[in-house]
Image 1 (cartoon, rainbow, N blue to C red):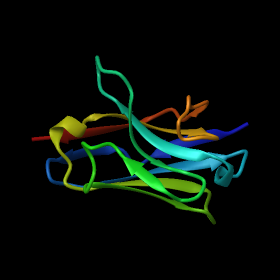
Image 2 (image 1 turned 180 degrees about the vertical axis):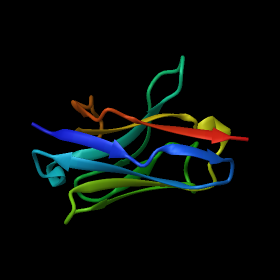
Image 3 (image 1 turned 30 degrees about the vertical axis):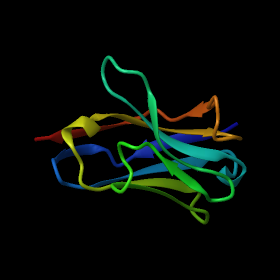
Image 4 (image 1 turned 30 degrees about the horizontal axis):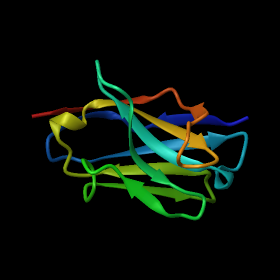
Length: 118
């Protein structure tokens, strides 16, 4: 069983930065692909970044060059550094875990809200 707990969301102005964290409990996350997802009101959940078990990363086109996914193995924690934030980045952000990045993702956190004002 895997438990995920996100933190670090908040409200920022456009151009600002936030760093999200996702603490993993109950299992070593090195056995899983870890992803960051977001969902805005009325929209489908989309994956914005993922880091595979081998450390390779992937990003949605909309965040490439602005967001960076990373993990701290010693702390069993996943991060998402978000720079140059735009109002369209406003959403609830979730971390997810699954054995393979292709999903479907089985484990989810409760989400953390990110609001970017213009």
